[in-house]
Image 1: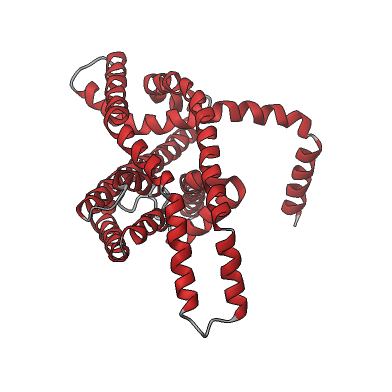
Image 2: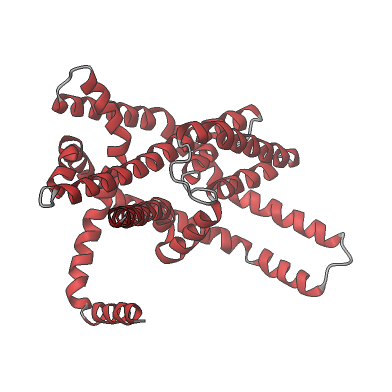
Length: 351
């Protein structure tokens, strides 16, 4: 009871002194994007830097080689993939009015040939159809609003190369710097905790992005084989959504199903089959070999965490909910194991 009283008092104190914390939160928010972006790139590029170091290349030169590799990847992506995806996306936006008309005709035909539909359902369908164009326009405006936010987000990315450089250069010095003020026993405990957190983040970031890339490639191959319209754009969307564990694949297949239904009814079955095959390959072959069971998170827990984070922080919360929860779980498990071990040692000493 005392714990909860203190917790509520702390929350009340923070609320009453918000004028003090608000500038701090704004400062943290200003550096959060480049810090998180550099952190993701750090975990992706760290193995490459260590590979260069293993062949006796100086660390600074290794970092510049990593930058060259990243620059080449970005160059080829924007040179060969982005123009095609942009053209397909523009065509998709241009065909939305035709798709809306097709959906209206289909539902009208279905309504005219049904005699057992309740009046309430017919009324709801009619309201939806009358406002369908405005719904689509709202979705498009949301997309372009998101693009506007993305542009402002990109402006913060200029700091990422600077952050990444110092992370790669001095990342190994962080733990010794933290532990130097503690005695040997506590320092060893903190090093073990930092090692576990590092392993958790490495498993998730490297694993999830590699898995998403593989799923995107599988989707593109499948969509290309069945000649689905906008195959590259839909595959890139599927790759992006697959970063979200468990829920992402269900979100990814929706636009492909809509496009497939507009193209030909049989495409609904083919798109669903391709997504099913891609997910089976990912869950049975790719994920076990890339990520293993390092995170040990129950699917129901992951879904609950994602939904809660999405309601609190939107899409950003959905993206970072699982690694954040995994880190918190790693810290709690570590301190619990430390407590159990210390208690066991005390009991052994008494015996």
